[in-house]
Length: 112
Length: 114
Image (cartoon, rainbow over all chains, first blue to last red; front, side):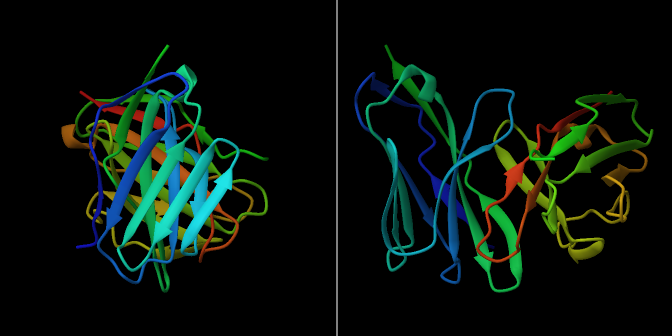
């Protein structure tokens, strides 16, 4: 059973702070890793993807991947109240299996 | 289109009735995925297509669920004889490629079985 684990939260940070979201996965064959943001009652919105070990930055977001530790993280710098949402870590199983396995999400609240 | 489209937004069915959901992938995307989200955050993969061909159906409860992607038509997911536990939000996602490709989600269809 392939699993993706996330801190369930909720995670609360003040406006302007760095929010750190973590994810571990069980399948060593996993090849691609995604962070989605889901507002309540809405669909998942892709905010970052990463395929190689190391860091990937896009604006205020940085994704970090460590395949040896089977660990993915998302850092949100200068957090804004509009960042308040559930953040879903999703992993593509690799090989010929392209479906995403999701974690249960971390609820982030950014307090003004 | 540049977004995944799903219809209807909401669907209410009595237990035992049929439900049919539709998805139009982003133009140029070859892969379509159906996911079921229950209990707020738990996503379950149902089925995927590469163009009109079933690619992976390992998540489908085959007794009552079926799906198609026909040329020049929206993809569809059909549930025969709905049960209370089928109440969920059904998301369709599409990707340009299969491997190492980002999946973009539609707005979802909320199915309520009463």
